[in-house]
Structures are given as structure tokens and as C-alpha cells.
Amino acid sequence: MNKDFQNISSELLEIYSKKLKVKSCPHCKSKRFIKHSRYKYTQRFKCLDCGRTFLPSTGTSLHYLHKKEVFIEYSKIIREQGLLSLKKMRELCNISHLTAFDWRHKILLSIPESNRKLKGDIFCDDIWFVYSQKGRKLIPGARRRPLPEPFKHREFTVRMISMNNHSRNLMKIVKVGDLYFKDFFEAFANSIDRNACIYNISKNDQLKKFAKEKAVKHIIPSIEEAKNNYKLFQTRSEIKNFINKILKGVSTKYLQLYAGYYSYAKNQVFDAISEKFLNHRHVWFTYTRLEDIYYIFTKLATKVLFAHENKRFWKSTRNMVIPERSMILKIDEDLYKYISGISRIY
Image (tube, rainbow, N blue to C red; front, side, top):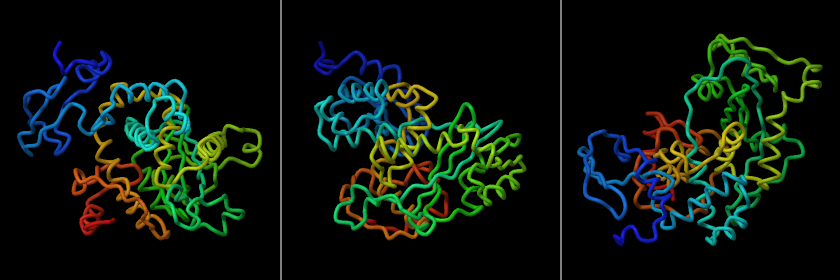
């Protein structure tokens, strides 16, 4: 037997030969590439435009993993048992705490994106979380407790907008602090079907303006309806329980990732080694730039002073452009100019 195939599971070979589809260069998106010898048990490719070589797994959740078979088992545990604590995952897979942490977030970043618009009755809620820098040591108040009077401390409230119908749940971290019309428009302008009807559960006036601009029907449930229909507040109750009680709080930096997990796992099987997950090629590039993305978020969407304590960075992606769709923000041309002016955040 070829030494490259020794100790390689049939499942891993199947992933590389059948599930991973190479359609373009993961570095420059060019479709002009050729086969360029082999690397161990898989094909290597070379881009004819940027000249870089890559594998079928480049950019995916499998990128740069040394224990790929263990990662497969890790993914199966999440599929069958949901998100367990990092301590439990560390024990089950015999890996370090940092590896368990990295793998979890790479998996969450690989959730497939959907461009389908929300149709029919859409229940919209404005969900509040306390701004948290959990995990950043030596920062006073990094992990804030629930605010006794959140309306008096709005500068520390993370605003998550939930829009859901009977088949799909869309959640986005919009900003920290008060919401305005432009916040709704930038986040959901392309997500609502024109024949939809929005139920404004939180009675937000800015959402009313958004519905008028989109020319969709807008309804504010009466107090009686709100009391008798628990489903109106079901999403708010479930996501708060998931974040605050099951996960024991989540850093604002990663809150969008966990909201994405909740939204996806609620209606579909969360299988991180399925073809849809494995072919998400922004995972590695986004994960290694999360600190930069979070820094930009704090600058553009909050009044919170950014405090850096995370010293990890990757030279291989240090100068790469942040993917257009990345966790919290949709990066546009103006933001690219802003990013290019930041020589080094760290």
C-alpha cells in the first residue's frame, strides 16, 4: 500500500474524492486552474492567474488540520448531541482546549449561506444582549452581568434582529446601541419578499419605516394577541436560553456564529461534514481575520472602546482581503478603503 494512504480512513478519502468540489481558486476566485501533481492522498491544483497552488480543502474547515479524522469525529458529536461544553469535547476527542475552541468556531463559520427571501408571515423581534468581552483577560467588566435597567445602559446592549417564518429563521447582529432605519435597511433590504407581511413584535418604530420603504404589509400585534400567542416570543425565549443558560454567555465577537447555529439547527440537521458545509471556502480566511472583523465592528457599530488582548495572528492571511460576507459585516468598497488604512491592528 502507498505510504500516503496508510492510516487514512475511508471516510476522509471519500470527503476528498467526492464531497469537496473544486470550482475556482480559493485565493483569487479565478476559474482558470490546472491539476498540479498530487499531495499525499489528494490532487493539487495551480491557478493560472495568481500562480498559487491549492488543495480541494484549501479555505474550508479542514484547512491546515493535522488530525482530520479526529475532526470528523468531533463534527459527528455536534451533529448527534449538539454543542457540548469545550471541556466535554476536549475529553471525548482527546484534544487540547484551544483545539476544541478553534474547531467549534471553524464549524460554525462553515454554515451554508442561503439567498432565499423570507416569504409569507414574518415575525420580527428586536432581541437585546449585554455587550460582552468574555475571554479577554485583564479587562475590567469584560464579562458583564445582565443589566438591571437595560434602557438606561443602551450603549452596552447588543441588538440582534430576528426575522422568521415557518420554514426559515434569520438572525443578524446589527449594532450595539439604538437602532435606526438604515440599520434595518442595510441588514435586511435583500432578505424580504415583496409579498411578505411583517409582524412587529417589539413594536419598533424604525421597523415600521423599513416596512413602508419595502412596501410590505406591517402589523403590530395587540396586547391581547401577545398574551395569548406564546409563539410570538418563542424565538426570543429560546435564543436567550441558549446563549445565556446553556452556553453560559457568549462574547459579542462570536455571538453571530452561535445565532447562526441556532437558526440552522432549529430546522435542519447540523452536519459539518456534509457537502454543503465542507464546500464553504471562506472559513479559514474569515477565522484568521476574526479579530480584524471584530475591531471594525466595534469602530463602526458601537461606542465601546476596543481593548485588544488577543495576540494570535496568522502570517499566511495577514495581508489578505477580508471575505465579502464575513460573520457580522458585509464588507463593501468603502469599508475596503477603511480596512486598507489599518496597517496593523495588533
